[in-house]
Length: 91
Image (tube, rainbow, N blue to C red; front, side, top):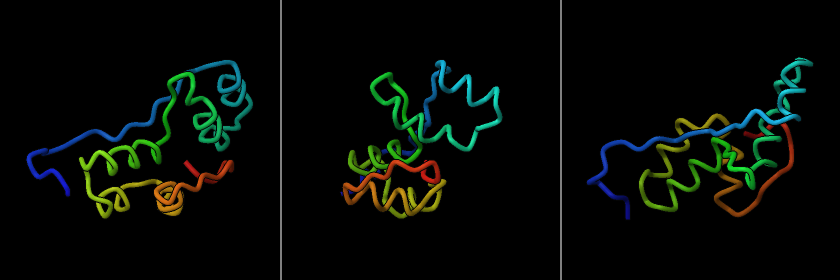
């Protein structure tokens, strides 16, 4: 069940400026950055969606709270079901 003894926890997106991300920024392709963040998980990057999923599974936030603040509610629901998409429209 949800841990009520926790007041607030951070949900974070982590992006490292590597060569592919630097190139996208220079070329104005920022819309593709969320996909590169997902691909960069092995480097320590983390998407908003993964952050919310991890917090829900650790019972630090409720699903309804994550859904309220998630940038992409559909991606969150899919990730909670174990489905991941490789699309730049999900973050």
